[in-house]
Image (cartoon, rainbow, N blue to C red; front, side, top):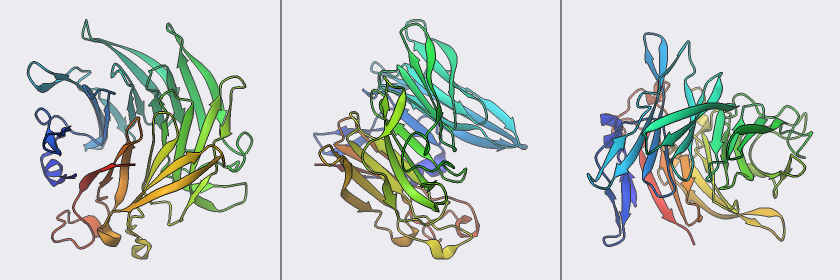
Length: 362
Protein backbone atom coordinates (compact mmCIF):
# COMPACT_ATOMS: atom_id res chain seq x y z
CA UNK A 1 0.00 0.00 0.00
CA UNK A 2 0.91 3.67 -0.30
CA UNK A 3 -0.09 6.19 2.38
CA UNK A 4 -0.27 9.87 1.45
CA UNK A 5 1.61 11.80 4.14
CA UNK A 6 0.84 15.30 2.90
CA UNK A 7 -2.15 15.73 5.21
CA UNK A 8 -0.06 14.86 8.24
CA UNK A 9 2.54 17.42 7.21
CA UNK A 10 0.00 20.22 7.16
CA UNK A 11 -1.95 19.32 10.30
CA UNK A 12 1.06 18.29 12.44
CA UNK A 13 -0.55 15.07 13.61
CA UNK A 14 0.31 11.39 13.66
CA UNK A 15 -2.14 8.92 12.15
CA UNK A 16 -1.71 5.21 12.85
CA UNK A 17 -2.84 2.61 10.34
CA UNK A 18 -3.60 -1.07 10.84
CA UNK A 19 -3.79 -3.70 8.13
CA UNK A 20 -7.26 -5.13 7.50
CA UNK A 21 -6.95 -8.44 5.66
CA UNK A 22 -10.67 -8.50 4.78
CA UNK A 23 -10.25 -5.53 2.46
CA UNK A 24 -6.50 -5.93 1.83
CA UNK A 25 -5.80 -2.36 2.84
CA UNK A 26 -4.66 -0.20 5.76
CA UNK A 27 -7.28 1.58 7.84
CA UNK A 28 -6.88 4.29 10.44
CA UNK A 29 -6.61 3.01 14.03
CA UNK A 30 -7.98 5.49 16.56
CA UNK A 31 -7.93 9.26 16.25
CA UNK A 32 -4.96 11.43 15.26
CA UNK A 33 -2.38 11.92 18.03
CA UNK A 34 0.53 14.29 18.63
CA UNK A 35 3.32 14.35 16.11
CA UNK A 36 7.09 14.20 16.10
CA UNK A 37 10.11 13.16 14.06
CA UNK A 38 10.47 9.65 15.54
CA UNK A 39 8.01 6.84 16.26
CA UNK A 40 8.31 3.39 17.87
CA UNK A 41 5.77 0.60 18.43
CA UNK A 42 5.62 -2.22 20.95
CA UNK A 43 5.62 -5.75 19.55
CA UNK A 44 1.80 -6.04 19.64
CA UNK A 45 1.25 -2.44 18.54
CA UNK A 46 -0.69 -1.39 21.65
CA UNK A 47 1.99 1.08 22.87
CA UNK A 48 3.33 3.94 20.76
CA UNK A 49 6.25 6.24 21.56
CA UNK A 50 6.66 9.52 19.66
CA UNK A 51 9.61 11.87 19.88
CA UNK A 52 9.73 15.46 18.60
CA UNK A 53 13.31 16.47 17.83
CA UNK A 54 13.38 20.27 18.30
CA UNK A 55 11.06 23.22 18.19
CA UNK A 56 12.71 26.61 18.18
CA UNK A 57 11.07 29.18 20.46
CA UNK A 58 12.98 32.43 20.98
CA UNK A 59 16.37 30.78 20.40
CA UNK A 60 15.57 27.96 22.86
CA UNK A 61 15.20 24.42 21.57
CA UNK A 62 12.51 22.22 23.10
CA UNK A 63 12.02 18.49 22.62
CA UNK A 64 9.01 16.42 23.61
CA UNK A 65 8.22 12.74 24.07
CA UNK A 66 4.66 11.37 23.93
CA UNK A 67 3.71 7.90 25.14
CA UNK A 68 0.39 6.31 24.19
CA UNK A 69 -1.52 3.09 24.81
CA UNK A 70 -4.46 1.89 22.75
CA UNK A 71 -7.69 1.54 24.76
CA UNK A 72 -9.80 -1.28 23.31
CA UNK A 73 -12.88 -0.07 25.23
CA UNK A 74 -12.87 3.38 23.63
CA UNK A 75 -11.11 2.30 20.43
CA UNK A 76 -8.73 5.21 20.80
CA UNK A 77 -5.25 6.17 21.96
CA UNK A 78 -4.64 7.42 25.51
CA UNK A 79 -1.57 9.41 26.44
CA UNK A 80 0.17 7.95 29.47
CA UNK A 81 2.84 10.53 30.05
CA UNK A 82 5.38 11.79 30.75
CA UNK A 83 3.17 13.74 28.31
CA UNK A 84 5.56 16.62 27.81
CA UNK A 85 8.98 15.22 28.53
CA UNK A 86 10.52 18.59 27.67
CA UNK A 87 14.20 19.33 27.32
CA UNK A 88 15.59 22.71 26.37
CA UNK A 89 19.10 23.50 25.28
CA UNK A 90 20.07 27.09 24.60
CA UNK A 91 21.82 27.13 21.24
CA UNK A 92 20.88 23.78 19.71
CA UNK A 93 20.65 20.05 20.33
CA UNK A 94 17.51 18.46 21.64
CA UNK A 95 16.14 14.95 21.35
CA UNK A 96 18.25 12.67 19.16
CA UNK A 97 16.73 9.22 19.51
CA UNK A 98 14.01 7.14 21.14
CA UNK A 99 13.64 3.37 21.50
CA UNK A 100 10.80 1.20 22.83
CA UNK A 101 11.12 -2.43 23.90
CA UNK A 102 8.83 -5.26 22.77
CA UNK A 103 6.53 -5.07 25.79
CA UNK A 104 6.09 -1.33 25.31
CA UNK A 105 6.80 -0.71 28.99
CA UNK A 106 10.46 0.32 28.77
CA UNK A 107 11.84 3.07 26.58
CA UNK A 108 15.02 5.06 26.19
CA UNK A 109 15.27 8.78 25.44
CA UNK A 110 18.55 10.22 24.15
CA UNK A 111 19.28 13.92 24.54
CA UNK A 112 22.06 15.89 22.87
CA UNK A 113 25.23 16.15 24.99
CA UNK A 114 23.78 14.30 27.98
CA UNK A 115 23.26 10.73 29.14
CA UNK A 116 20.31 8.72 27.95
CA UNK A 117 17.39 8.16 30.28
CA UNK A 118 15.48 4.90 30.56
CA UNK A 119 11.83 4.95 31.64
CA UNK A 120 9.91 1.97 32.97
CA UNK A 121 6.11 2.17 33.00
CA UNK A 122 4.06 0.64 35.83
CA UNK A 123 0.69 0.09 34.23
CA UNK A 124 -1.07 -0.77 37.49
CA UNK A 125 -0.14 2.54 39.12
CA UNK A 126 0.18 4.54 35.88
CA UNK A 127 3.60 5.77 37.02
CA UNK A 128 7.15 5.90 35.66
CA UNK A 129 10.55 5.25 37.16
CA UNK A 130 13.63 6.57 35.38
CA UNK A 131 17.30 5.64 35.33
CA UNK A 132 20.26 7.27 33.58
CA UNK A 133 21.97 4.73 31.37
CA UNK A 134 24.19 4.54 28.30
CA UNK A 135 25.22 7.79 26.65
CA UNK A 136 25.66 8.52 22.95
CA UNK A 137 23.88 10.12 20.04
CA UNK A 138 21.92 6.94 19.32
CA UNK A 139 20.50 4.50 21.86
CA UNK A 140 18.51 1.32 21.27
CA UNK A 141 16.85 -1.03 23.74
CA UNK A 142 16.53 -4.74 22.94
CA UNK A 143 13.16 -6.34 22.31
CA UNK A 144 13.31 -8.13 25.69
CA UNK A 145 14.10 -4.84 27.44
CA UNK A 146 17.30 -6.13 29.07
CA UNK A 147 20.03 -4.46 26.99
CA UNK A 148 20.63 -0.85 25.96
CA UNK A 149 23.18 0.07 23.28
CA UNK A 150 24.49 3.59 22.87
CA UNK A 151 26.96 4.94 20.32
CA UNK A 152 28.33 8.32 19.32
CA UNK A 153 29.67 9.58 15.99
CA UNK A 154 33.18 8.36 16.83
CA UNK A 155 32.19 4.71 17.36
CA UNK A 156 32.45 4.90 21.13
CA UNK A 157 29.94 2.25 22.18
CA UNK A 158 28.45 1.36 25.55
CA UNK A 159 26.22 -1.56 26.53
CA UNK A 160 24.13 -1.54 29.70
CA UNK A 161 22.40 -4.75 30.80
CA UNK A 162 19.58 -5.39 33.25
CA UNK A 163 19.91 -8.36 35.64
CA UNK A 164 16.38 -8.20 37.02
CA UNK A 165 17.31 -5.69 39.71
CA UNK A 166 19.96 -3.25 38.48
CA UNK A 167 21.30 -1.78 35.26
CA UNK A 168 25.05 -2.36 34.88
CA UNK A 169 27.44 -1.15 32.21
CA UNK A 170 29.10 -4.23 30.68
CA UNK A 171 30.94 -2.70 27.71
CA UNK A 172 32.56 0.66 27.11
CA UNK A 173 34.99 1.33 24.29
CA UNK A 174 35.53 2.20 20.65
CA UNK A 175 34.59 0.06 17.68
CA UNK A 176 37.40 0.71 15.26
CA UNK A 177 40.47 -0.92 13.79
CA UNK A 178 41.67 -2.00 17.23
CA UNK A 179 38.72 -4.36 17.72
CA UNK A 180 37.09 -4.88 14.32
CA UNK A 181 39.15 -5.27 11.16
CA UNK A 182 38.15 -2.93 8.36
CA UNK A 183 37.01 0.03 10.43
CA UNK A 184 39.54 2.84 10.64
CA UNK A 185 41.03 4.13 13.85
CA UNK A 186 39.44 7.47 13.05
CA UNK A 187 36.08 5.75 13.19
CA UNK A 188 33.16 7.78 11.89
CA UNK A 189 32.98 11.41 10.98
CA UNK A 190 30.72 13.75 12.94
CA UNK A 191 29.04 14.38 9.57
CA UNK A 192 28.42 10.71 8.87
CA UNK A 193 24.65 10.71 9.47
CA UNK A 194 25.24 7.57 11.52
CA UNK A 195 22.25 5.27 12.11
CA UNK A 196 22.08 2.13 14.24
CA UNK A 197 19.69 -0.68 15.11
CA UNK A 198 19.92 -3.96 17.02
CA UNK A 199 18.45 -7.47 16.86
CA UNK A 200 15.78 -8.65 19.30
CA UNK A 201 18.20 -9.88 21.97
CA UNK A 202 20.70 -7.08 21.38
CA UNK A 203 23.53 -9.41 20.32
CA UNK A 204 23.78 -8.09 16.75
CA UNK A 205 23.93 -4.45 15.76
CA UNK A 206 23.99 -2.80 12.37
CA UNK A 207 25.55 0.58 11.66
CA UNK A 208 25.28 2.62 8.49
CA UNK A 209 26.71 5.99 7.60
CA UNK A 210 27.31 8.07 4.51
CA UNK A 211 30.86 8.89 5.61
CA UNK A 212 32.62 5.98 7.32
CA UNK A 213 36.38 5.59 6.98
CA UNK A 214 37.92 2.20 6.27
CA UNK A 215 41.46 1.49 7.47
CA UNK A 216 43.49 4.45 8.64
CA UNK A 217 44.31 6.80 5.78
CA UNK A 218 41.51 5.59 3.51
CA UNK A 219 38.91 8.04 2.22
CA UNK A 220 35.46 8.18 3.75
CA UNK A 221 33.02 5.70 2.20
CA UNK A 222 29.28 5.05 2.37
CA UNK A 223 29.26 1.80 4.41
CA UNK A 224 27.02 -0.56 6.35
CA UNK A 225 28.65 -2.62 9.12
CA UNK A 226 27.11 -5.53 11.03
CA UNK A 227 28.70 -6.55 14.33
CA UNK A 228 28.05 -9.43 16.73
CA UNK A 229 28.73 -9.15 20.45
CA UNK A 230 30.77 -11.91 22.10
CA UNK A 231 29.52 -11.85 25.68
CA UNK A 232 32.14 -14.29 26.96
CA UNK A 233 35.13 -12.30 25.69
CA UNK A 234 33.31 -8.96 25.94
CA UNK A 235 34.20 -7.92 22.40
CA UNK A 236 32.68 -7.34 18.98
CA UNK A 237 33.33 -9.32 15.83
CA UNK A 238 32.42 -8.45 12.28
CA UNK A 239 29.42 -10.49 11.08
CA UNK A 240 29.87 -11.06 7.38
CA UNK A 241 31.43 -8.49 5.08
CA UNK A 242 31.35 -4.71 5.26
CA UNK A 243 28.81 -3.51 2.69
CA UNK A 244 30.08 -0.70 0.45
CA UNK A 245 27.54 1.67 -1.11
CA UNK A 246 28.20 4.39 -3.72
CA UNK A 247 29.63 7.49 -2.07
CA UNK A 248 27.79 10.71 -2.85
CA UNK A 249 28.56 13.03 0.05
CA UNK A 250 28.23 13.47 3.79
CA UNK A 251 24.77 15.02 3.41
CA UNK A 252 23.14 11.78 2.22
CA UNK A 253 20.42 10.70 4.63
CA UNK A 254 20.72 7.07 5.77
CA UNK A 255 18.48 4.65 7.65
CA UNK A 256 18.76 1.02 8.71
CA UNK A 257 16.84 -1.73 10.47
CA UNK A 258 17.41 -5.40 11.28
CA UNK A 259 15.01 -8.31 11.78
CA UNK A 260 14.63 -10.18 15.05
CA UNK A 261 17.33 -12.84 14.65
CA UNK A 262 19.79 -10.58 12.82
CA UNK A 263 19.76 -12.41 9.47
CA UNK A 264 18.12 -9.72 7.30
CA UNK A 265 18.78 -5.99 7.13
CA UNK A 266 17.17 -3.17 5.21
CA UNK A 267 19.21 -0.06 4.33
CA UNK A 268 17.80 3.26 3.12
CA UNK A 269 19.96 5.65 1.10
CA UNK A 270 18.27 8.80 -0.12
CA UNK A 271 21.03 10.00 -2.41
CA UNK A 272 19.40 13.37 -1.79
CA UNK A 273 20.44 16.55 -3.52
CA UNK A 274 22.48 18.95 -1.42
CA UNK A 275 21.53 22.56 -1.82
CA UNK A 276 25.21 23.53 -2.16
CA UNK A 277 25.81 20.94 -4.89
CA UNK A 278 22.81 20.46 -7.22
CA UNK A 279 24.84 18.05 -9.39
CA UNK A 280 24.92 15.45 -6.58
CA UNK A 281 21.36 14.31 -7.14
CA UNK A 282 20.44 10.62 -7.43
CA UNK A 283 17.23 8.73 -6.80
CA UNK A 284 16.64 7.41 -3.29
CA UNK A 285 16.56 3.66 -2.74
CA UNK A 286 16.04 0.87 -0.23
CA UNK A 287 18.18 -2.28 -0.26
CA UNK A 288 17.44 -5.63 1.41
CA UNK A 289 20.34 -7.93 2.39
CA UNK A 290 20.25 -11.51 3.72
CA UNK A 291 23.03 -13.14 5.71
CA UNK A 292 24.66 -16.22 4.13
CA UNK A 293 26.08 -18.21 7.04
CA UNK A 294 28.00 -20.59 4.75
CA UNK A 295 29.90 -17.84 2.98
CA UNK A 296 29.79 -15.47 5.99
CA UNK A 297 28.63 -12.61 3.80
CA UNK A 298 25.64 -10.36 3.16
CA UNK A 299 23.87 -10.92 -0.15
CA UNK A 300 21.82 -8.21 -1.82
CA UNK A 301 18.33 -9.64 -2.38
CA UNK A 302 16.49 -6.63 -3.74
CA UNK A 303 16.83 -2.94 -4.55
CA UNK A 304 13.71 -0.77 -4.50
CA UNK A 305 13.87 2.68 -6.09
CA UNK A 306 11.58 5.51 -5.08
CA UNK A 307 10.21 5.88 -8.59
CA UNK A 308 10.11 9.66 -8.49
CA UNK A 309 13.42 10.24 -10.24
CA UNK A 310 16.32 12.25 -8.91
CA UNK A 311 14.17 14.40 -6.63
CA UNK A 312 12.82 11.34 -4.76
CA UNK A 313 14.32 10.89 -1.26
CA UNK A 314 12.97 7.37 -0.81
CA UNK A 315 14.85 5.58 2.00
CA UNK A 316 14.84 8.48 4.44
CA UNK A 317 13.38 6.06 7.01
CA UNK A 318 13.06 2.28 6.86
CA UNK A 319 11.79 -0.43 9.19
CA UNK A 320 11.41 -4.21 9.12
CA UNK A 321 9.21 -6.58 11.11
CA UNK A 322 10.71 -9.08 13.56
CA UNK A 323 10.11 -11.97 11.15
CA UNK A 324 11.69 -9.98 8.32
CA UNK A 325 8.71 -10.40 5.99
CA UNK A 326 7.47 -6.79 5.79
CA UNK A 327 9.35 -3.53 5.36
CA UNK A 328 8.40 0.11 5.16
CA UNK A 329 10.18 2.96 3.42
CA UNK A 330 9.43 6.67 3.31
CA UNK A 331 10.23 9.69 1.19
CA UNK A 332 10.57 12.81 3.29
CA UNK A 333 11.73 16.08 1.79
CA UNK A 334 14.45 17.96 3.62
CA UNK A 335 13.09 21.50 3.60
CA UNK A 336 16.32 23.48 3.81
CA UNK A 337 18.13 25.64 1.30
CA UNK A 338 16.82 27.54 -1.68
CA UNK A 339 15.70 24.39 -3.48
CA UNK A 340 13.30 23.49 -0.68
CA UNK A 341 11.87 26.79 0.52
CA UNK A 342 8.67 26.13 -1.42
CA UNK A 343 7.09 23.08 0.27
CA UNK A 344 4.36 22.68 -2.35
CA UNK A 345 5.46 19.62 -4.32
CA UNK A 346 2.99 20.46 -7.11
CA UNK A 347 4.78 23.75 -7.79
CA UNK A 348 8.35 23.02 -6.65
CA UNK A 349 10.13 20.87 -9.24
CA UNK A 350 12.89 20.00 -6.74
CA UNK A 351 10.73 17.82 -4.48
CA UNK A 352 8.15 15.04 -4.68
CA UNK A 353 5.16 14.35 -2.49
CA UNK A 354 5.99 12.77 0.90
CA UNK A 355 4.87 9.14 1.11
CA UNK A 356 5.27 5.86 2.96
CA UNK A 357 5.21 2.41 1.33
CA UNK A 358 4.75 -1.07 2.76
CA UNK A 359 6.24 -4.11 1.03
CA UNK A 360 5.78 -7.86 1.54
CA UNK A 361 9.03 -9.82 1.14
CA UNK A 362 9.47 -13.43 0.10
